[in-house]
Image 1 (cartoon, rainbow, N blue to C red):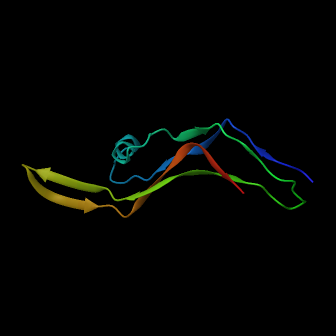
Image 2: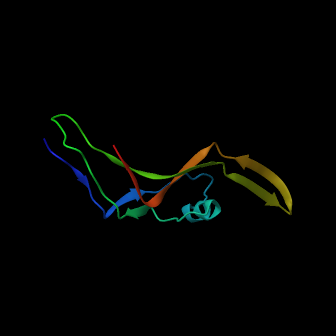
Image 3: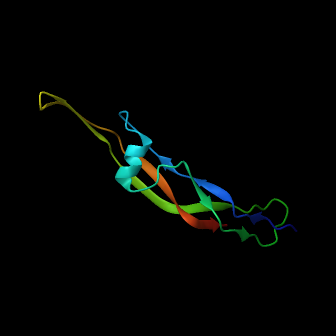
Length: 101
């Protein structure tokens, strides 16, 4: 039987969906989250004893945001184009929070 440890010093990926040329920084600012691609994790967990074929995993805990991006195009202060993206999502990992299973 083996144990496995998910160690501190790992990182979790922060995802941000984009459309219509919006930048990661623009969307992150609107969502009030960091635009950094990763969030460092400084917690750890250790598995119980594992039998052959069993596995132990950790995944980040965080907030999922769902949103749409709207693009307005103006000519001489008149809207000539109004487009809305499909639903997009972002995942913002909570610092120092993981779920081990």
